[in-house]
Every structure is written in C-alpha cells, then in structure tokens.
Length: 151
Image 1 (tube, rainbow, N blue to C red):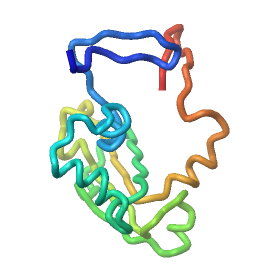
Image 2 (cartoon, rainbow, N blue to C red):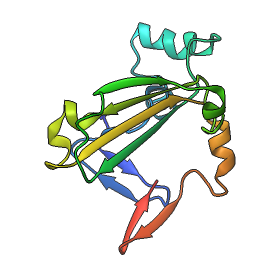
Image 3 (tube, rainbow, N blue to C red):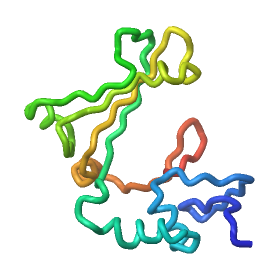
C-alpha cells in the first residue's frame, strides 16, 4: 500500500520490519530507491537540477570514529585543523587541507562510559581514490559469528 515494510537483501530474501530507515544519502534514497516519487518541489529541484551544477554538491566526506579508553579533557570540543600541503597529501582523496575533529562524548556523554572518549574526525574528499583501494565489490554478503551480514 505504497509504504516501506522491510528490505530485500542481495540474495533475494526479504526481512519485514515495523520501521524502515534508509541509512544512506538522500539522493540514493529519494531517487534510486523511491524513483523520485515522493519528492516535494524543493527536493525535486535539488536532486534533478542543483545537484548537477558545478560546485553545488561536494563529492564525498571521509568520517572516522575512534573510541578511546581514557578521558580527553584537554581536547577542544570541536576544532577545524588547517593542514600544510605535505600533511594533507597523506590523506586519501582530500579536497581541502583541513580536518574537523570533535570530541563527541563531550557533547553527548551518553555515547560512551565514564572514563572514555568518542572522537569524530572528518574531511571533504573524492570517492574515486577510496574505490581504487578496494579490490572487491562494494556490496557483499558475509558471515560473522555465524550470522549473515549484508552490506
């Protein structure tokens, strides 16, 4: 009846759910999965016109989460570090010589137990160098601990 009720896995199995959350970007969800069927006019313009204009959409974003087994009170809660060219060149696909670092557990203490820290680091990047590092398919079914995982 025109609403999501689960997911179909790469092997053809279907898993039903009361709530379905798309864990990918908006374009993939709205345009690829739903065929643009449920877009309002603003999002239709964004995904059919604006997205193709040079400089309007950034190609990628690298994100790293770290769990530290100690507190890190000396770290600024949120800082953007400007990098020299040599340091930036060491980061795969980097587009701007800067890295944003957030100590997420300072903002959201419920994210980690007392005495630990969650670090979130990001930078803008191109996706092509990352894809070149991977020799396998982007989507694969694998088993861990006896349970099939679909990614």
